[in-house]
Length: 76
Image (cartoon, rainbow, N blue to C red; front, side):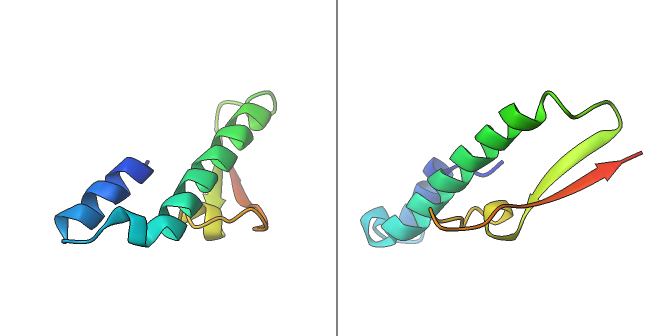
């Protein structure tokens, strides 16, 4: 999974200053926090042959504090 530190490194590699992209980095951090919370919550209800995918803004690592949560559940 992409990580905000990798975003910062990519921004610097292209000659940018990560401070100029704070909103992107904050959204990535928030998305990862939400994904981790979802993992913990879903760990008790998922089973073998089942997967939960984060889609929408969370899946793109663009979730803000007010973003909704979109999941797709796949099962065999």
